[in-house]
Amino acid sequence: MQTQQISAPSRGVAAPAVVSAPAEIVIEADTNAERRESNSRKLIIINLITVLLPFAGLAAAIGLLWGIAFNWYYLWIMIGMWAVSSLGITVGFHRLCTHKSFETPAVLRYLFAAAGSMAVQGPVIRWCAEHRKHHQHSDTEEDPHSPHMALNGSWGDGILATLRGAFHAHVGWLFGPSSTGLGKYSRDLREDPAIALADRQFVFWVLFGLAFPAALGGLLSMSWGGVLLGFLWGGLVRILLCHHITWSVNSVCHLWGTKPFDSHDESRNNAIVGVLALGEGWHNNHHAFPTSARHGLRWWELDLSYALIRALQFVGLARQVRTPDAVRIAAKKRTRD
Image (cartoon, rainbow, N blue to C red; front, side, top):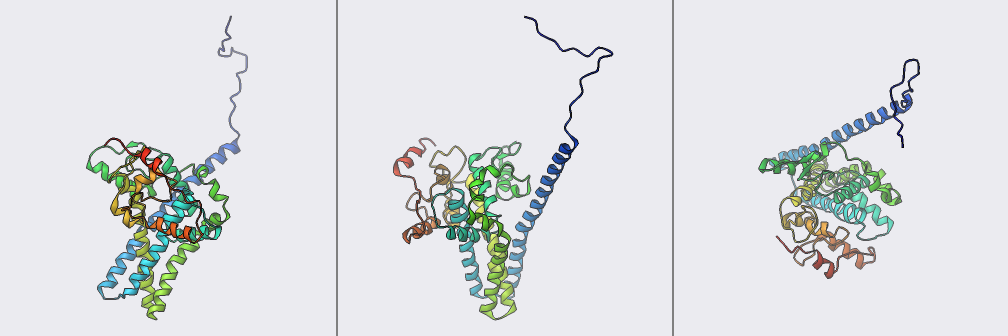
């Protein structure tokens, strides 16, 4: 059997024309690439402001505190706003919207998403999509915020490499290339009217989370100074706490702690973060059973987020609450160090 060989065209015979993409397709591709790059730059600038502004608020609050410009009700405003916005993240963004570990009426889904938006960690749909991507690619190069793997490989060995990875997982990832391919992780959320509405109203809820404590501080003190202190303590300092407690789950809880379960990644249980993050620090438990509404699986693992879910279940506002049974827990336990 002969094979047909394609040789160079002889003189006098026209060479096959090189087929190129239409100019308008090339232009459109270039435009899309430029748009993505521009959006990535804008996101980095927004993230930079979001990360640094609360530090400025903390410095101003401490400066005024030095001058005895403080009253205990500003502390309670901060704690109250922190509790609302933090539970909006832990219960709303994370366990309800991302992992669907329980179900609620649409109004409650909206309120949880609104509360989480006040923590200023991004709109609910993007937050959930990035977290789902984290679970699918945990501690690999595709993980948006692994302290172990960079986009181009491992961070390396030694203390400096560990610190570099910890910084990346904690906050550095916010200033790198923005995550791509998030659409496939959020289709169900975009189709949920309550979640989609809260997502569109993200900026409103961020501003509300700053204006409400300022107004409350002014009303309690009947002074403009109270407005400023309410804004600083209940607004900016509270956001600072929300940020770094949440981000410690990404960094600390993938580096330091115990690993009682096989989770196919480097997630850890960290008791300090577990308490501060309202149960989110039992992170190895969570990665072993990601759809569980309960993260603190043992009686002493304090999980205030799950306590709230149980309270909602008791009054009929939460249903289909998912937790692993004893058989699944035993099957996942590690048999080696």
